[in-house]
Image 1 (cartoon, rainbow, N blue to C red):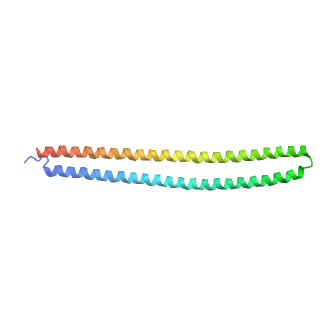
Image 2 (cartoon, rainbow, N blue to C red):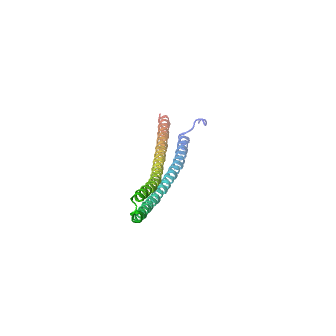
Image 3 (tube, helix red, strand yellow):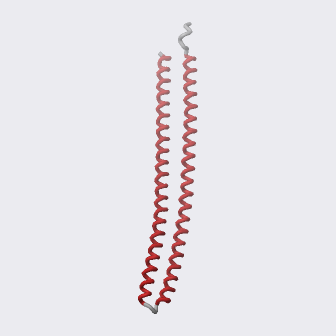
Length: 164
């Protein structure tokens, strides 16, 4: 018998070794995918907590704005009573109070608009990161599938040579 030509047992050993390496590689890739999913889930949970915290802050800000408006209204009423004897002074005081109230309102509006825009941008960034992670997972899955198909084709070719 010629010892340089591998026998069927050698081919089967090679196939088993290839399959074992494939399985190990697959298990490693799946572990990486699971780790990526855990990281994505952690980011998503963190963002959900952040959104919830911002929601509370916004509600607190609205409550604060309502308190400010109530205080401004009470202050305006008091000033009106104080200035009722002098219409010119009343008009001047009301104009000043209106300007102050308007500035405070504009300031609060700008702050809350900025907070909302920041939250919206964070949500968009998180959505993009999750999409990229999903695409990376899909690409890894396609590569693994292709590797398995190539391996099966090689096994089939080897088998055909053994059979013939």
